[in-house]
Image 1 (cartoon, rainbow, N blue to C red):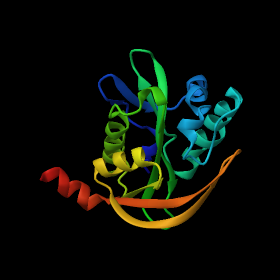
Image 2 (cartoon, rainbow, N blue to C red; image 1 turned 90 degrees about the horizontal axis):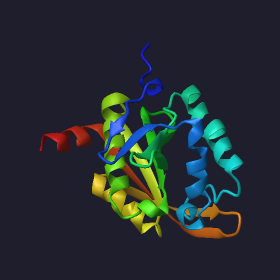
Image 3 (spheres, one colour; image 1 turned 30 degrees about the vertical axis):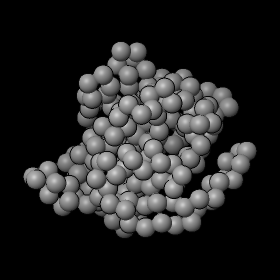
Length: 192
């Protein structure tokens, strides 16, 4: 039986590309993962040492293959041959042919439209390569930048849930906004 998540295509985004995360990306992952502003709304970080980034790749990203998910994409600045972020299907939706996307990008690359472009391509991969029925994405209410990216790509708001994010030095009480995009809407929008 064909397992498309084992062989993910490289996606050309012009100055950037999406390619499967590799062990050697840990140095670049540590660079943005140690930044408290970058990791503020994430359930991990900030990293204290590069070992944490290495462990993240080894114990979080690589094992996804065993769960029937792709490892995840590194977002690469082609000119610098540098990983500037990740975008990935990090978990399956229980009992459904669907997955949830998560993403993060180095602060030096914020507000340049890179993540919107990457998310748009992830949606395409999710429906056309992995054949999901729907894709889910979430963000904390105060993470407005993430909300803009999600809405720009065409996800529909579904619901809000209370959420408590426990970080090493703070506890963030916020609302979690949940969005979905269905295959039929994706293909319907492609034709219009």
